[in-house]
Image 1 (cartoon, helix red, strand yellow):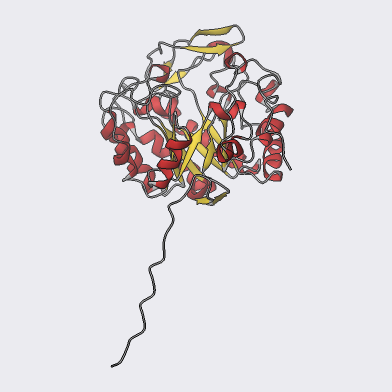
Image 2 (tube, rainbow, N blue to C red):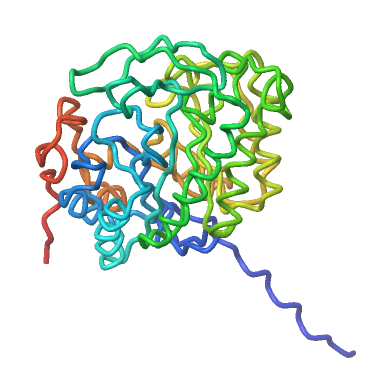
Length: 374
């Protein structure tokens, strides 16, 4: 009786962990924990990152990926006091010190580029300028100025001939990001800022090629991201969206098909990742029903989830394949070594909200890391 060779035993595949490395586009991450973008309002004169920013981001370099605070693409893009830019030589040099320190500590860092649109105040803009928006509809919200929180100013509607110039601002800022040593760029299309204002029917009442239909309302997002991709490569480009957040007086009458189409258009550009805020940014996750799995099924790149995740939720999302990485925001403010604390089950420090935007070192670079033990 002849015998045949035994079939090899199937190789067991272990579900990924939050602490496993992953490659997203061209970026090799040591783990799947992402530091979410966090506005801290500590830039110096000329919207240049301060020396404190070098320490702040360097302290958090153990994150698999740092996404910086939102950073202006032009003088007209600013909406909050002391937020940094990336459109002057001095700003590029300031950011280069940050990226050098993060890389020296073994981290990876991308810059989030934004234009706030109507979420601004005339005191923050060049003389004679007012905020711009897809339509001249004032937001029912406030912004942070030298006088504290004040109502935003009345915006004007962008002329169609002005839109290519803003697309060009994003393209130039993306090139500046690479020159500053960043590993890539995240385009901010969330939370009621300019790109989001074009997407939503509450804020976009245009009747030209950028308004009306879903195809038209997703056009500006597509053009901005396409310009960034053409400048620095799809594998170094990500986009942040927040389909149902009410932040900054934003809303849409039917967000599901809108964001499904937006993600399809991003997928066609073959970008590295989509970073999605689930629910209300910094608030409840169940603000309204939404099928996030339907979005993910339309995108072939990496999927980063965000909003209210704890360790158990984050591990489950990665293990079950619902996310490739998980972004944490406020916990990174007060836990510079958040990755280690999560891995070791160490206590987490709650952040001091009074110092989120206060300026200076307090509440910025003075949160202690765990003491090393032998």
